[in-house]
Length: 175
Image 1 (cartoon, rainbow, N blue to C red):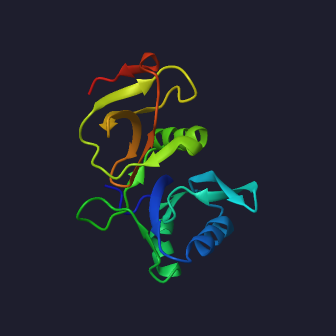
Image 2: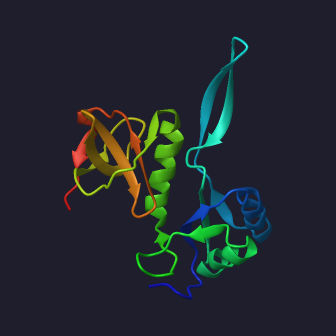
């Protein structure tokens, strides 16, 4: 595993109340790339519509940095930022660039049609989208309340679901 690794990786952070802006400032000052999954939310007020950009998952932030920088954020924020770690260890779990790119693409293109998945992703066919706006994404097909969902998972961190992708746009990926 990577305990002292000079390489740059994506890491997911669980952020506690009020720590998002300070962490983003720390990342910007250090020249570290970060990503916060956002969506436009429509509200009605006084008979008119207005839109607000809001985080899809309030307490989640991704950073692309060294493992040392990720660990330093915990102390710099007085324990209000914790990296997602490998099970039963305190080693931050890196996310490979391809997996992160697929996750970001699905969030960006499907932000208004996403659902956060709060069930285990241990069943369902692994598939690749071969056409349409999610072309190139890989994930799982799961049936929830009678509806088939396309689910993209960052194992142990988060899973998101897109409500509908036509069957002809999917191909099974062998395990």
